[in-house]
Image (cartoon, rainbow, N blue to C red; front, side, top):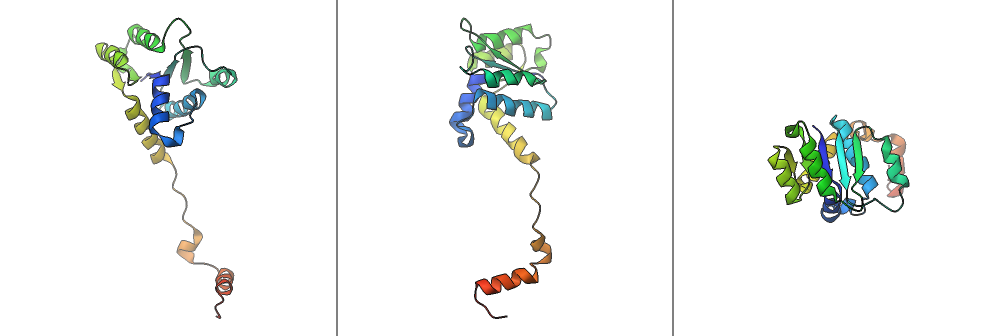
Amino acid sequence: MPVLFDGYNLLRSIQKNDEQFHALTEVGLCRILSEYLMKNRDHGHMFFDGVGPKDQTDMERLGGFTNMEVYFSGHDRDADSAIEQKILDSTAPKRLIVVSTDRRLRAAAGKRKAVSVTSEIFWASLMSQFDNQRAPSPEPREKRSGITSAETDQWLEYFDIEP
């Protein structure tokens, strides 16, 4: 299902509500979402207001994403209008997922029967998905076999205990 992201709405929500990501940038957000989309075999469209960051170097590298397109609305239009237009232009709006807390976008999605998810709920879901996919750390060898005799001698010496 194609996902339409209200970029700054999502980014500000993450920065405000998740201490671990308070310094997250546009590029960082796009990288995380691209990985998420890749794992879910989805495609996304990220919309930001304005013309983008002053240093476009990192944004230009985002062109390598095959599963997400990044748009900046420019000076004369806002991202919400661009997202609304994308919803209206969709030939299969029921397959769209719109990620935004903005009431205007959620209403536009509802009119076309697209799924809308608030930024907070989407981010919590994404984070729990990443947490569940992390491989558990392997058990230490000592848990099953105990420590070696050399290690035992080291501890005995450290605590000044005679064997």
